[in-house]
Length: 191
Image (tube, rainbow, N blue to C red; front, side, top):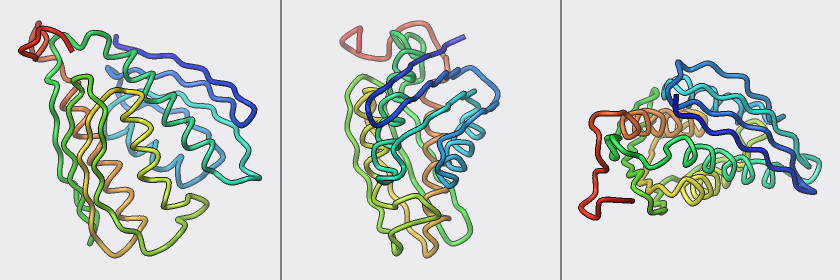
């Protein structure tokens, strides 16, 4: 089983996370931000990853520190679970609709971090989730997992747009981490 287990405690947050990328979609998630819990549950269900995440933070300030630090921890756990990435498909892509919204994600887990996100949101918040943090979460996750993500989403309803984006990311990542050979898919012989 390919797993990652990361803890992070700062003056702003306290996070314990366990990730199994060879799981079945079992989750135990508690961040104190209902909509973000919903997005992480949706992500793990569709990626078929098991995720145990207990996170507390200074939500009396706002949700920025907690969401950023979860991106750090999830990214590091993903990198740990992938190890040397031998045998992985490496690339993944997905296109997921949700009512009027449509998200596209293409990614490369080959060791270089980069995010390109084309998304506009009409509202500043969905529940207690600041829509500005969608980009920041994916940027932080990509940096710590050392993956490249190209993503775009359009639609009218911000809930639908964000959820279709998390689901498209899940399916693209599920395809990229799939074991389909033995060696490293790189002309360098390593990532």
